[in-house]
Amino acid sequence: MSALFNKCIKHLEHLVSFDTSNPPKNIEGSGLLDYLKSLDFIKPEITNLGENSYNILCSRGNPRYLFNVHLDTVPQCDGWNTNPLDLIITNSHAIGLGACDIKSAAACILAVIEEGLEDYAVLFSTDEEAGQSRCIKTFAKSKLEYQGIIVAEPTNNLAVTCHRGIATGSIRFHGTSGHSSEKSALENSAIHKQARWSFNALETARKYENKKYESLEGLAFNIGSVSGGIKPNIIAQSAETKFGFRPLPGQDPFEIFTELNAKSVKGQFDFTKGFIAPSLPAKNNSHRLKALAGKLKLELSKPVNFWTEAALFNEAGYDAIVFGPGDIKNAHQPNEYVDLADLKTALKIYKEIIQ
Image 1 (cartoon, helix red, strand yellow):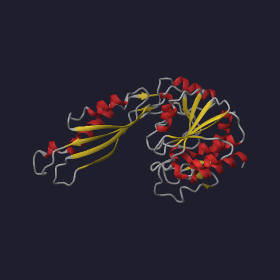
Image 2 (tube, helix red, strand yellow):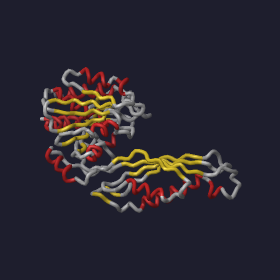
Image 3 (tube, one colour):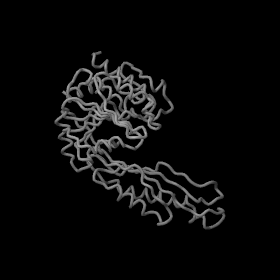
């Protein structure tokens, strides 16, 4: 194995060992910040944005491009065969929490910088996984003069220039409590109102099935959680539905919310919007993003369904694409891993871009 690859594995081993799961997002207590400050080849500028959201900017010289890597991970889940915070290296995989999504990219970039490159800029952020994105929203308000921004996510080392947006919300339905033997239960039950809304919302979502943007189709609507009521012989006084959908580029999520909520009777529900973020491209500038990928000599990916913070940079007016080692199918699950071959390819590409 090359010295550069060995450095990458060393950094990845350290990064995985820090529990940066989000929630609970204990970034300060994880050891991550201390580790980055201990590296003598970078001088991180750490900005505390509150609630354990940290921006860590490492830059030198006159960089043309900004790399962004989020260092928070999803929480540990059941089913791991090893300690998720111990990096396991096999003949073909690096296994550990965040190894795929997306500490591997951070390890690659740190290894490349450690080689002594002069002009680079990398922003490590820490609040992507919980639908907050305070780090990127704040940083994107700065006057950035990079030629492009490369946001790290597992894309099989392909350049993603198009993906869905994200919109979530919740509805609380109001009913009138009473004994279930009353005929009024049919209309007064909050759960019955919830069920009618759900049926109508699914019918509305089906109307979008033929809407397309490049290879993306439909609304990707999902009712993710339903709750309410007490027991079978009590008319439910309240019920709640949490739902979401993934808009295509060009679709207005607020118009879709309005259409969905029109299926409920006014005064019988309270709607609360959740996390709403744009698609990529967010500015109808697909040609610019593809041109950026071409300039960097990156192979284009097909549009993807998952959301990334590149859309926030693009919404703020910057050309931003998504690129990184690993396959999204191997993220957010037990025994998360990244292929070693992917790491080697990513190292070469990151080095070429920075040079």
